Image (tube, rainbow, N blue to C red):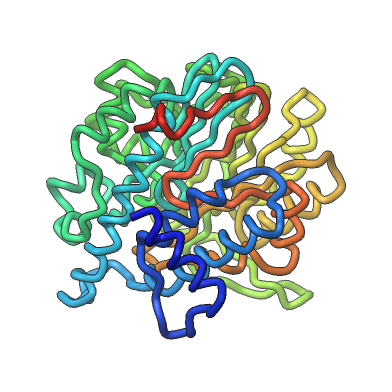
Length: 379
């Protein structure tokens, strides 16, 4: 098999695929093995990973909703088989990686990030797949999501719950908040940090859910955390004086989404995550940095005016590494945000200079001091 794949790769690079042609998942797997994520991609690794991005853009292109056709579900299930192989790779890496200093950051679905340090492991905005309901376990109440084949098995969720010491959820939306994992963590007595809104929705788990103190740092599991409460505006949008899109606050209850903006210290790194927060938090971030919370890893800077203000502030500050998230959120139109854009223009420069690292499903990035297991140890 390996020789056949090597030959197919040689043919592939000699004669690139036409726009309408699709690469096999076996070849995609081999490319990911040959060009793992690192800080500072060489030309060959960059080319292979850019090719994977372009190929996955072709196949992760179906929205999961009530209009999804039977034919589309068949295609999604083929993709789900590949996805579960990547899930197994990620879980195995987390289980077997030895960490003495630094961190190993593993990416799963969409915004789902798991960070392992010597002191312990955290989950950030974990969700197992394209889930549309977040009031109970999707396997019980969400037949559309279950039909995709993306949902994790109980055994996989238990493995992750055994690994994770604390979980941080930014907001109520189901692509950022896993009831299935949270239920397992609460049963194990592990803290799950949420917004007041989400604690109210998940009343059955509320005894194990924690709303952070928004005025001071706190310790949850292996992480020291500073948070502020923002908002994702879900109503109408408008334009500012420069013609840029802005979110407009909705006065109706339950429309806008409360959003925890996090600074999380773990393993010598500080992770900044604002999800789709629209509120401007640059002054809060400036104060936090003076108090020692200087971000070294950026997941999301926010959305619309919130994102613009944060980006403008960070552009004047210390260097950091971007780890893009929220791609291929399949409950969104067309299968969600495309990936190829992360490999173009400024993205290409940052990937090659070490200022950005893109993680595909199940991949892990090793940051200073961590030691990833060898291939033989993972088998």
